[in-house]
Amino acid sequence: RNCLLPQVRGRCFTGVTLLWPGLVRQPSPEEFCNRLSGQQIEDIQRRGKYLIFRLSQGDRLILHLKMTGVLLLQPSSAPVQPHTRAVFHLDKEANIHFWDQRKFGAAWLVGDELTVVGNLGPEPLDEEFTPEVLGEILSRHNMPLKALLLDQNIIAGIGNMYADEALFAARIGPLKSGQDLTEEETKRLHQAVREVLSAAIQHSGASVDTYKQPDGELGTAHLFFQVAHRRGERCRNCHAAIQRTTVRGRGTYFCPVCQR
Image (tube, one colour):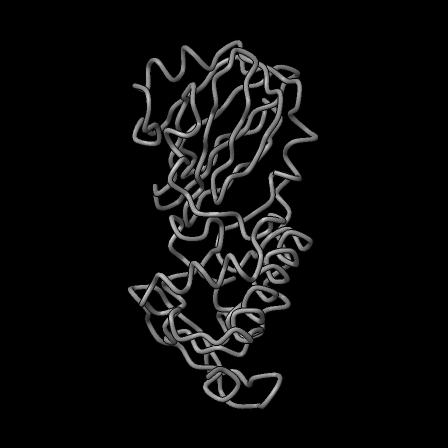
């Protein structure tokens, strides 16, 4: 969002080339293309992992990149690369390419964004997200913390790698139940989540796999990871080997000594 918005605010969609109609979840692909054409981008906001384009005719274009999706701002003369699922044509000779190797991404064009994002949990970077709010959330759920942090209906916007990093920073094991956290642990986790996410934004995301910024540059957040994707490497705190396990189907990295 931070990279894309200054480049596209005020520009108009002139058309859409859907290379994979399955990208569009609502409305029909044909209506999606017809309604989007001619609308101006007034703003882009984020809700959880969703990008919300606020458009001039009151519609909301909502995009979710999922695991491998990338939005690339390209000149209109740029060739379409393999795995590009849609090309959003803009005025002033520019296009937004939706690249998604694994076809997990999704797009909606709706009048009310709440029909798509209305069930998401609170935003961890909002001022209203206090340690007390986190504590109340944790007290309602008897599940591993790693799974809890990834459930977007409980807390919105925390990705797999950043959940690992936040739990390491808070010195809490990924399998510990949310209900079992002490008040002090809850405060540490609250601070860690906010610091890890803020750092990720500052470093433009993590490019450990396919992620790129809209200008094609790589993010650098992964260069500062303490545990994520470091299985077998030494913990920088205690020098124990970083381990990997699976929590509710998601790969999870942690230090067996620092995290309890």
